[in-house]
Length: 83
Image (tube, rainbow, N blue to C red; front, side, top):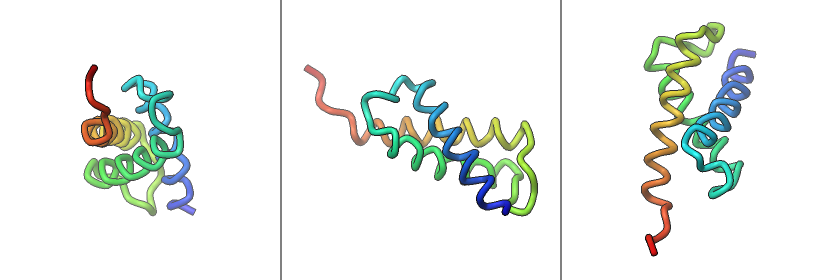
């Protein structure tokens, strides 16, 4: 059950990160959610979270930070040339 909660929270965090980075319309929402799930999982685990534990405010904030950072990295590689 813990992994399902982490995936749901990761999806929400990915969506929030795309809004923070103002990339919600430029990329597909699916890519933002997937990047958010991956970034949230990595940062959540590095921040002290575990699949078997509940989500705390600290792990949520770590997850949001990880999703924003990973989304910024993805944007560097997927950015189109500047006109």
